[in-house]
Length: 136
Image (cartoon, rainbow, N blue to C red; front, side, top):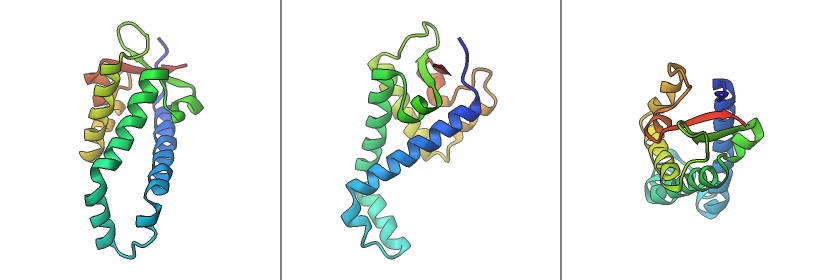
């Protein structure tokens, strides 16, 4: 098993976040186009938190479960697999990983920082879902 380097994981994260940002912008264009100040933006985020979190959850869950990779992973040629068997994650492990990823983001990305000190470059959501990211 050839563990994906941290640089590839960071680049993949950036690509995926850009794609998700554009998707959310398209979905909420009418609401976002009239926002003029930080208070209005904060209100928008509070009102639409569940929808935005659901879009992120579904993006990561379905793509990792079905293909073992998000768009960013595909571009960087890395794949999410089960740590023990090296096969794609089962649907419930992929869902758990995606759900815990949301918490890692919400907690100031602390769950992501764990990858910098993990021998297998695993984030917290990787560790709890028994996943590892490898070169494809």
